[in-house]
Amino acid sequence: MRSDRANPVEFDSALGIHYPHVRFWLVLLFLTTCCWFRSSAQTPSGGAESSTWLSYFGDQPFTNTLALHLEASYRHTFPFDHPEQYMLRGGLTVDHGHGLSSLFAYTYLVSDPFEGGTPLSASASEKLPEHRALEQLQFQHRLIRTGEKHITLTHRFRAEQRWLGTETEGEGATRWKFAERARYRLTAKIPFKTTSWPIAPNYVSVFNEVYTAFGPHSGNSPFYANVDYGAFGWNLGSAFAFELGYQHRYAPIANRVLGQNDNELQLTLLSTAPIRRFHHHAQ
Image (cartoon, rainbow, N blue to C red; front, side, top):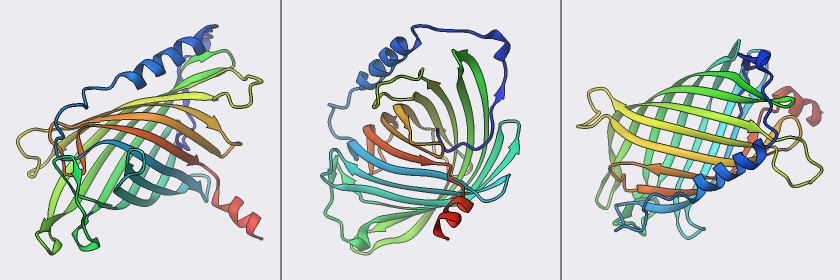
């Protein structure tokens, strides 16, 4: 579960493809991906090279087609040595049916600056803030059947308008820089067969996301970053899930928060619990 409300369209349920050894091969692929660290032992490049990322992703429905979108993330250098960034996001998710959904959201995040890979002892006035608006279109569909379950693909297109605080020495963020960015993410959610082992994961989630800069403030190169992610997931009832994963982020230019190669341990709680259920319990 990646907090996606839209019901997927089943493209080829008639194929009825079965893979008796799918779990073995998917676990092997996941471990191979997690162990494939692009060289991060190089000279620090202006940001953190290893991080721990604690996140919450939620789409809380309040009608059949609308949901309150809530996110929060807190990032530290690995394991928990120095804070890097925290992020809060709220928005509205619209379910258009047939696997299609859209999201309109606002993001506020604050970053701690680094210099040459070393965190600076910045005061609260020297932290780097950012305001961000985003528009997203997402399409989810079933790919192939594995026993009684399906591998699901999710295509996510996102445009972002960013207002980044720029630092003035001794005064913190006193000026603002505007930038635009586009992102495309392809996610595969691969379910496991039900097992009697109580701590066995229920699925594997993997994705690749490409970031590109566009518009008059995009600079010399449109390529901004590339992110690979792989995680084991556990369903916690029908409305919650937990993912433990690894993420690698490559950017050609460090941004004073993250280095060119950032290796991240991800711990994520996901939710699609409806608001009316919370209201009912509160009564």
